Amino acid sequence: MTCEELLYRYNPWWEGEFAAEGVVERPEALEALRRQLTTPQVVLVTGLRRVGKTTLLKLLARELIATGKADPRHVLYVSLDDYRLAAVTILDLLEEYRKLHRFGHTEPVIAMLDEVAHQPDYEQQLKNLCDMGGVKVYASSSSSSLMRSRKSHLTGRNVIVEILPLDFQEYLRFKAIRIRKSDVHLRKRYFEDYLRTGGIPEYVLRGDIEYLKELVDDILHKDIAAQHGVRDTQLLKDLFLLLMERSGKTLSINKVARVLSVTPDSARRYVEMFASTYLIHLVPRSGKTNERILSPKKVYACDLGVRTLYTGFRDVGSLFENYVYLRLRHKQPAYLYQDGTEIDFRTSDRWLVEAKYHDEEMAPKQQNLFDQTPGVRKAVVRNEKDVEELFSGQEMD
Image 1 (cartoon, rainbow, N blue to C red):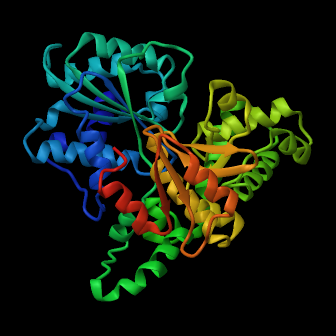
Image 2: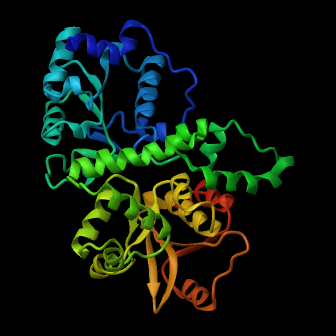
Image 3: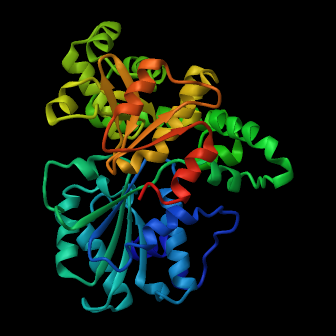
């Protein structure tokens, strides 16, 4: 297959075709991408595998074309994990694309480069595209290496948009559930269904447990074992189960090392591998730099359905705390710890948030720490409605 044929297959809108029927849209996530359209930076779209990054890029392309904001030929989409493109650089691909449509280098194009980290030296190439001008780049990856690269080619030239699993409101939309005011008593039941199912879009729609198992297996084998040369995949599976069971709790690297019979350095490296693929999220302790670095981190699951798959549907309060974390993730939350007492989250914009599902109450020492912590706005969230009200009232901004 020639490069021209491949590009036409990836971009059916060049010939007036764009089938997107049956796709449930995510307006909030799409708006996060849309806001970056007129900025000069490369937009790095990150997040867990199968969380919907590719779909969102294609929905953005469809919207731009349908609204007349972009000529179909000026929108390029390509998946760079395609083995047929292994020998083609990003810069050569853009050159072939311009030749194909007889575009000069001053004609603006929108390039959507899926799974860009499969390309060697992708940062240098994206920097070159950015410096040349005329190309608006959306580049996606399922690895946080996009954010934490040791190379600084894109410093000041990129903005990061992380796509998370569906939140509860999006889950209802995907399930075509509308809770009427007369049926508000059903809200808790639907929310606990969500806590059990999670927010991986295809799993929400299909309900096939094998799909969720395959997702985790793909990440363990392709993104961790293969990329980092880990031969003992059973160790990775054992570690992931341990991490899911510790979700919402602080993680002792030494204890992990003892359980797995590896060195602490190896345990730390394995945990960081999981975090780099978004399978887990690590939350530091609030405090000075040395406290944040040296104190044990709390661990949260990437998705509630994935967690339930490994631990069963139990400890609803802990699942709810995990949900609150995911909703606060963009606020860089840290946990507050003082004299043996902990508050769940302290956010970058100085909110102190404790998750207590429905009738749960704080212990006296915890209540005292919550009440006496100065310089922050405070909220105790007891259900998903409390969480949404916290956001809808824009108190978090």
